[in-house]
Length: 91
Image (tube, rainbow, N blue to C red; front, side):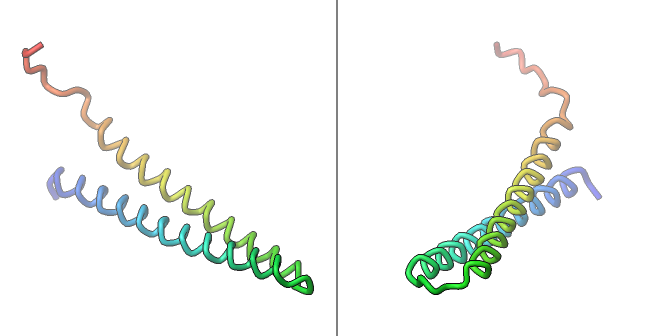
């Protein structure tokens, strides 16, 4: 496999992780807001269930952060694979 193909696979994987993290974040935020609103509007709501749902949403957001950091690390590692760019002499 060529170096360019390997790089493209890493970039595609990083992009996929970012996309999955975005989707997971969006769903977590919606779930958290809906649960918080329901709990706020219903004084008889089950606080333990609300807390568990909000904790799960926070956990999803935390996992998304890890995915984004991993994707960013992959991109950084790709750029550090190149020791330096050739000097064009145009300075």
